[in-house]
Image (cartoon, rainbow over all chains, first blue to last red):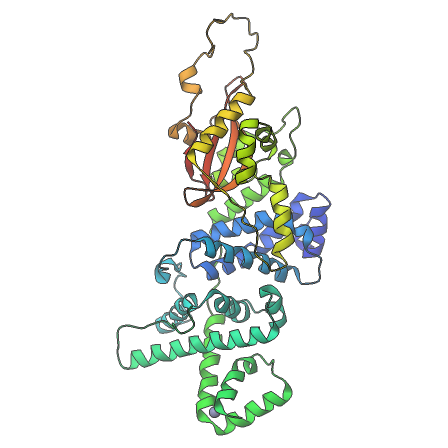
Length: 198
Length: 264
Ligand SMILES: [Zn+2]
């Protein structure tokens, strides 16, 4: 059975009818987006891996609850984000050293070192945002979800999606401006944006 | 509109999600206001940078652990226990993902544990070993509704793990020695040919188990908080070479598969 040609709905129906291999295909298809989401939310590769595993194990029991009113990926992101949020709530408070935990993405020949530095700075600045702002900018600008989908994933109003996204982006734009201003004036210490915290 | 109002619309403008009237107002303003035009440029840069963040992917090892955990859960052996076991469950311990495998365990032994009068109250009060089906149902009710998800993990202590192991062994005494032709010393309570080695497994032996070299069968698992972290509490049988049950053991294993504690 070539499961890879089936869509999510068909895979889930087959799984619920007892074809367990269909679920494995579902996992393969979504594991990297979910891992990526978990990584961007918690900021640590090892934790993101554990979370990804937990999320799919939970999915085994919960997938029958997906009724198809939202896209499966939207629904799965919601499940995953709720799980990540619970995890962060339980995590012992400690300083997140973002720069150390970001995995090396390897050389990027297409881009100069300066661009990479800016990007890493923005990644770090994203980790400084509160989770709700971090999630919304991730879902929109990185994962490419629509406003409606984001509203559904985060279970918030459309207006809240717009305002959170606007604040998150302008916070990062402010940080970027500060970085550029700093490099112009050759300052050493850059602060990531703090005004959205708390 | 004032600059302040325009700034608030720029993010939505970038995504083309403004009403036509608002979009026109923004465009009109941008033609005359260099400051807002620069703000738009900056926002666009942020959007581009975030979109350009390279994707992260799971490591190969991690993807394998995930696959093993899912496969184990999907395995027919995970169905309620029959009288004969077809799948050698202990083989699962040959994979590096001890925790993942723990996740795969059937939960039948919980029923056994719950029948024990001495543990029953304790278990029920503390939800120490809440039956996963009931817990998951409750979580399912609330989670998608956006309300607080029920906390899945109650805490468990070393003493309780020891107690569980003891209870399990008391309720399920090792099968009497089969009549293999030899007469054992019937006056000794322990007629075990190698009692010291086989009756207790220490950290070294746990590693052996993890390597799949000892015949054991996983009979129960649940997630609890153990010493500040979430852990699988797993119960399993330890068998000898003749496939006879030696004893029952209970261990706490971290979600990433590290052995945290073994009942003594
Ligand atoms: Zn203006």
